[in-house]
Image 1 (cartoon, rainbow, N blue to C red):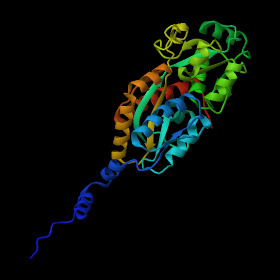
Image 2 (spheres, rainbow, N blue to C red; image 1 turned 135 degrees about the horizontal axis):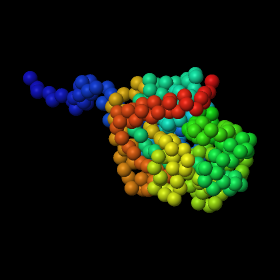
Image 3 (tube, rainbow, N blue to C red; image 1 turned 30 degrees about the vertical axis):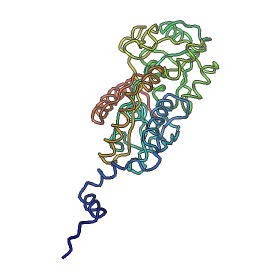
Image 4 (cartoon, rainbow, N blue to C red; image 1 turned 180 degrees about the vertical axis):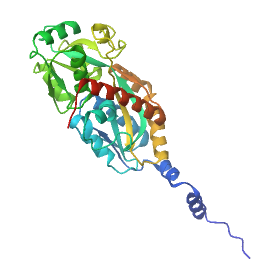
Length: 326
């Protein structure tokens, strides 16, 4: 009887049949373009950070990473869209402290659950937040700003990227701790708010150094303080709000990658490894650091713990400030 050797194709079919489906899929992932949802308009800090990562992922994978800007409602519209996407690895989200730490306490009705509806991938970076004023505002420091706000309650207005965004809530926190009044003017994203701030349509704004530093350096805006507890290496001469009259004031913006809940562990692991590798590239670190961001890149478990702790902190701030959005 003739001895027959098994066909190679049959051998591999048998091999694939005993391998976990997720592991097989992860090995071939991605096989087509991936959508990166940025829940804020183009040109803002979240968009800039997201595009740096998207470009490098596309180069690494050999497939497009399409940035999908879905701005509105403090980032919650785009985040909800990502949460409801198929958990197949082909939709990822650039979530922020606004969408995944602040929103749960600020919105009485939130369409998504920042914990239940997402799988954390990695924390990309944290960013310095600046308190910037238009040069027409007659103040040189935080104490003078507070004094002006108390003396002339209708004199100051502050812009934000939208109701519920980090720039909105930091402004509310500032008002509450300073015991002063300012008119809140919400916009649909950082970019339109920044345009009006630079043109003098509004008095001030709390925003990331990623967006503000070019205008501060050109003299179109004045930086009064940073909201971090410690001075920023990107702007060492700018004092903190805490040392300028409001002890304990602390606010930080962060950016991270999330996938829809239900995305396989194998895909999350693959995404984490590829993105963390990108964050370690010298040109990426220099690019993000130059924009005022501190690069992180951690495990999904570490990111989840960080998000939980930050959400608890903002819950206290929201309660103290009395800010609420229906």
